[in-house]
Structures are given as C-alpha cells and as structure tokens.
Length: 362
Image 1 (tube, rainbow, N blue to C red):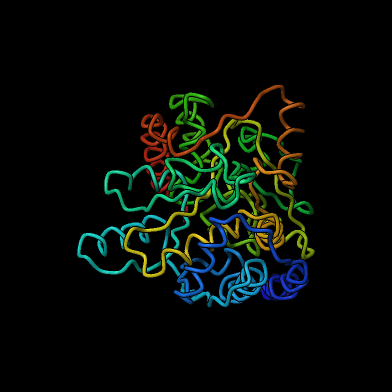
Image 2 (image 1 turned 90 degrees about the vertical axis):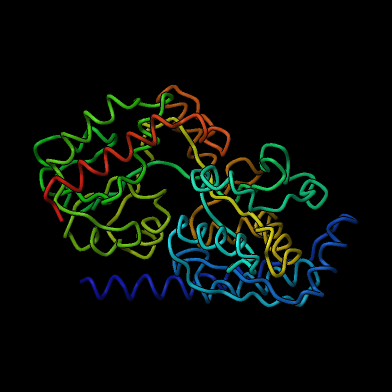
C-alpha cells in the first residue's frame, strides 16, 4: 500500500506539471521590468534551493525555467539544489554574508517567522518591486521592499477518510476517546506558535490543549509523509503545514481530506527574498516576479496547491472566505511585522514541542 501510494504521488508530480506548462504566455512589461529582464538575461543563471516537494523540485524547476523565459523573453537557466530547513538555509546565507562569500542560493524562500529572526543581520536586498508588476506587487504583498509574499499559509490538519472514527472539524475533536493513539503530529510542534498567538487561543489555552493532545498522539511524522496517513498507520495528522502535500495526495486518489481549522484566525505567508550577496541578483528578482505573475500563481497552485489569497484569481481565497462566513470571524495577517509581536506564542510553541517530545511517543 505504502509503495503504491508513493508511486501515485510520483506520477502525479511528474505528469501534472507539464500540462500547466502550455499556459505560459509572453508578458506586457513595464520599462522597469524590461530592464530587469535584460539585466537578468546577461547574468544567465539563477540558483534556487528547495525541497523536492516545493514547486516540483528539480523537475519543476525546469518547468518554471521554461515559463519564466517564455513570459519575459529571456534565456535564463534555473539551477536547482536541495535545501535543508528554512532556518538552516537562512543560517548558511548569514554565514556566507559575514565571510564575504556568495550566498548558497540567489532566492531565499522562507516563512515570516524565519525572516523576522534574520532581520537583525540585514541580509536581503531591497528592490523597486512595484515598478515590475504594479498591479500585483503592491504594499499588501511586499514588506520593507525586500520580503515578497509568494503564497498564503493556513493552519490545518488532515485525516484518513476511510478509516477515521469520526469527521473532525476542529483540533479539539482529536481529544475525543476514539482518536487515542491514532493521531500523528510533528515532533517540533508545527503551527502551535500560531494557536498560541493572542489573536487565537493564547499561550495558556494552547499549552493546556497540548498536554491533553500529547496523550492522544500515536507518533510523529513529517508534513511530507502522506503515505503514512493514507495507509492507515495514522488516521489523522495535526497540524499539517498548510496541507499542500496532503491535497496533492488526495487528488492522486489517496483517502485523505485536508481541513483548514477555524481555531486559528491567522494566515501566514511564504516569502521570496534576494540575499545581498546573491551571485545573480537580477535573475533572482525576475524569478520572484515570475512567481507573482498570473502564470506563476497558476503554476504554483498546480504544483503545490498553494497560492497568494491577496491576488486576483486566487484558488485559496474562496475557501478562506467560506470559513470566515461559516464561523463568523475575519482572518488576521500574520506577516513579518506581526511575527515581532508574537514572542509569547513562539515561547509557547517551544514549550509545546518539549511536551510532545517528552510524551514518550516516537
């Protein structure tokens, strides 16, 4: 079963992406974007580090390369390399910058929490983003002229639709007796800093929940392990890192449903930034501009089932609006600036991770 599901996912990842490739079209460019494209074309390359599950990994990078070049009339080569975690890649950029060496990646993709931690090192290059795509790279999308929102992150969970004892809607549903020993989580407490924010549950309620939840979990897994959920090894996974991998698995035929939980009224973001010591800074900026283009957002959805809900045509936005209407709340933007206000939530997340790790489950 596990091998079969892995094969389904591999086939989907490879087969679905080229279908989207046919939609790339040339762009009507502003003078600033045209100048950027010319400068990027002279650089000829852009290095991008990522996981195999992000934008299709090495095969997806070639699809993005083809789309970008067709859209902007360039001949840039996208050099993909595997990355470690966002914090580890950020640390590597900081070390290289401090030692006057080229950055290991021209484009740093990370979440707001990572960028808020790195701000003190002043690692990233500002750019006149609004002059490139004025209708898309707005003040709501670009922070401090250097952090560009690429996709919206939501807090949620996934469950096995065939074997689950009930249909969960909220995180507290997993405290019911029928879920004991059947739920997996991450060993690092993914998402609990958001639950512990003042806009959500707050630290006290979150830690109280985690103490009960730790007794329910049957083990740990990663957000990139949908086969463990689909096979029935675990019947639910909370939280699931925005769930893009789980949604992709469900579309491939796995018995998985992803739920955006209303317990957390926050949306966070994945960002693209250009290190000051990037070897190909213009190509990096053009790469980020591509991901914010209409074509880039459509490709991001087809690869990751993630897009930026702030942009027209977002596939995610109707889902968020439906949740707001059903449960009577409005989402708060958990951007880089907000991250600086969440020290208590981050501290609670660290405590939550310790409680989970000490629960004795592996």
